[in-house]
Image (cartoon, rainbow, N blue to C red; front, side, top):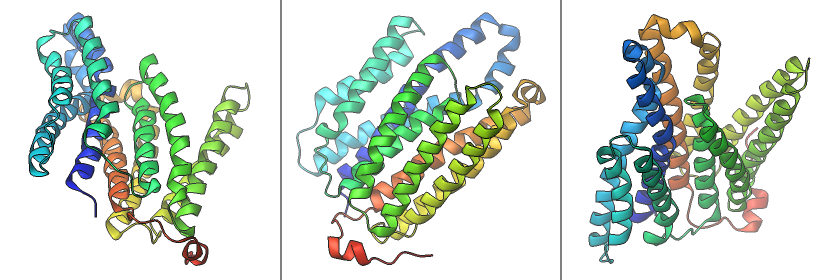
Length: 315
């Protein structure tokens, strides 16, 4: 049974990361709006998902910081004053900094400091390493998928770091699952390899068609991986629903990508541009809530090795 602190940890980390990712591109968007007053509405439509991520991140972070205080009192633990001050100042500077570069940088640093210290602050214990692996996958996938919303150099660097975190998380995810869950994690790993091959081929002239074939195979293998996770006996029914949400996020991300081919003129249509932003936001939220359910749904006790070897694997 996951403790209140553990559930709060997953929520707070997801929202801190979402806010930290959206902070710098959001500031750039506000600068563009100030420089082009006649195009404010179009710029807002183009960055609808980014705006939502930013404000959702602020509200959810503040709510969860209050919960840190409340849970500490409930569990008779010392209230982490220093942690609350660091994270709180990171959010506060977004309001009082007036958009100044120094305020953005300090706020980003404080939010990231809070992110890396939450685990120690809330005294999180990973009883099953698969839960830690799933958390790393959540972190890496959010960082990588955010390129759908913004493609600035900072976000691309974050996406590369997220890719590494995702890769490291897969082995941890496999370690505490049954045979079915391990097969699902293996599919996720193969999907990454296929995707990387596609990226390399995409940089070679006249190899675009071959690269697309690898992308399609990668998508199918990844989809199969989530399917296996949804049948793992080491993940409770609520966690299995999370795996299904990840499959939905994959399908929706394909639709978003198809819309992306017509991005230049699509935003001229107003409501359609906002619809695209809503779909991008839905992909991010489905990934967050999907992995959150899996993390909380992974059973605390590892399955014995002899049971793991004979676990039922659905066809």
